[in-house]
Length: 545
Image (tube, rainbow, N blue to C red; front, side, top):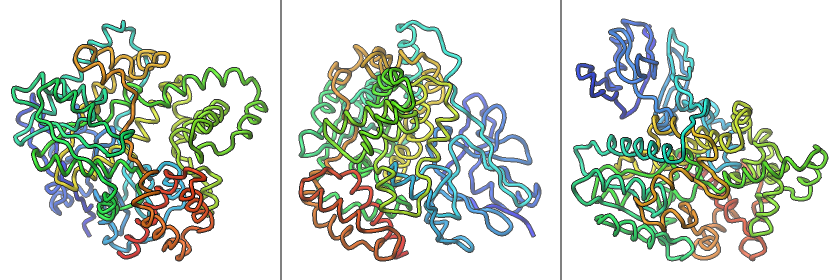
């Protein structure tokens, strides 16, 4: 019997400008019985020379493996072969699908709001990790990594030289992503990254750039004035949309498209801005990847300070004493909680420090909700072990690039944009730009209290100063206000009458306590409750399927 692989994807190999004779190979053509019969094996995402894209010779073919995780693929082993899909849900209909869940994946989700590769929520399905090749041969599948971002050796460039080269590479990345035979625009928040992309688009285009922004009625979360200022600066054809709490209406569709639990609340406005954008263009450039490359998160700055404080805690017993005083800091909010979280982080190893700043539910709370979990941080812990020789800033940037970016941000953008048949392109994910910035010294990324130092230096005079100087907000959503207001009944209906609890999947005592404390104003459990709410909605959707 011929062994073959079932493949589903819309990707195709890129034709390089200097190799015009190389044919474009679609995945459909790779999965013909004739091809498999002739070679008795099929290399998927195999490493071709000089690039992993295109064709290598007459007996093997390959397809794009995006090094930073821009596309997701799910795989299952089956009799006489393997299934490879771009949707985990479509693996349900594969031969002998086992619906048993992965406890470690549930732990990862409760810790970080998403399930990282190679885990999926289902035990019999795995994700193909970024920058890996899947080789299927003689009825067996194996993985091999083809690209690894390196932070060493470091380049010795002045600030001026590093800034100029950063602009050159970013401009080239934008230029490549402007190649299109359909209308193209850009997401614009008014922050450094999206403003830089729009500025270079305006420089490279002979038509007004179409820009699209999302805002909220809650002033603390609304970035529309900043986006409007940048759009005016470059004469953009600007479009805006204000998200209301009734956005809950989009959640069932989002849950269905993600296929497994996903709790980044910014998926809601991202879906709306994608829908708005698709009314005008087919392709949109984004600022995704700028924070991970150049060091734009508050945790990057805080990690540098925590490393200094940690050096003053000379003994392990002293660090343990500090940690015991500020136990489970990521279950709290407010100024006091932020101070506790910082001291907890400064007293912890780097993987625990990252969890304190990027995590949602603590181990103690997870144990109350889902006792079956015995390991909540295995993926991140192993990554930090791999990058243990890097300094504090580069170690966090490496984890953000290898873990947070492909697990959360790129999944969110991929799913929400494709929901509306919109193609999202990210210049900051250009591998030449990412490799260049990774090799810069850490103090050219985060200098004292300034994040994204070299990018801001590079864009000085090119974008409005407000975009460079204002405090980073991110794509935050007023979840606390929504859960205590318009979504109060939704929260109670789903979590106080949880199907997941009724089915014995999770325990309800801790969840009921969180709901009561949050709605009474005793504690702010908004992020924890949102994570549990998305888990419940996913449970109901998958249970019905």
